[in-house]
Image 1 (cartoon, rainbow, N blue to C red):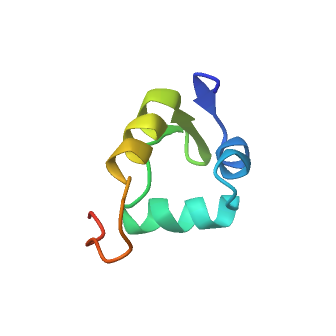
Image 2: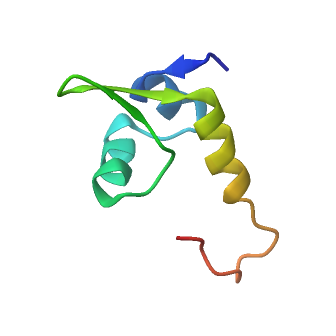
Length: 66
């Protein structure tokens, strides 16, 4: 995983879409991100890894973390 990823690169990595990541950012969810200027968004590898680790589940009936 590279140190910085675009929304397109992260979406491909997690089998999602850039639009889904944009919705997560808008709603305050998903991995932390870095904003460069008004429109450029990048994700740091360590933030993505932290988000993934915090969202591990072993059962489908576990409550979703906020």
